[in-house]
Length: 264
Image (cartoon, rainbow, N blue to C red):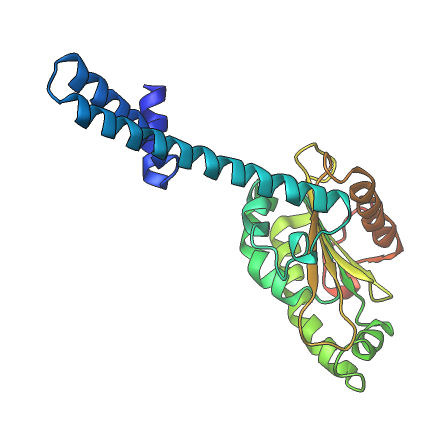
């Protein structure tokens, strides 16, 4: 059954077709020869055609192996394109959040991130996940600093306006979670150099997404993803960076409209 399932999957995906065709032709020739249902000339011609098909299959496989070896050698020499590890978004983050028990997010205003994740964050909090989120403090010079780094250097009110709905969403999340401490929010007195999304970062299946913020550019930010087994040093580096930034933040409290949450 396992063999039949594999054959079906290969045929559905259009993979290894030449191998199955070769096997079918070989079986057909064997049956024709065994029962004398075809002349020797026909069998010889069909056998040669089968061998040609097999040779073509082997040639294609060798070419694939050669291409793979060339890419590995190029990687060893440092000839890796930025496209191989940088992207413009985090397409898998929603599904990853759905499965996470420890969620940590850090950024400037996190407007789009929170809009995309707020429903799932609420569900994860209800399921017992611990959520920690840090954004810039509207009561410091951080909005002015953020504006200076943007395409609107003389309009810090833009960042205050962007921050306001994010804080409202965070306040609503914290209110629904109650005083259990499942959702913690901190305000940063500075603009972080990068954004972070850490999901179960202390576990072997953890993942860290890093947003590399641009300066005075509207073209979008680059994103790269780290995993513990593959990116050991840099994974630990950005995991520790979140903790350092978190410690520098001010816990949201009743003066911000948030329920009081024990620090830690």
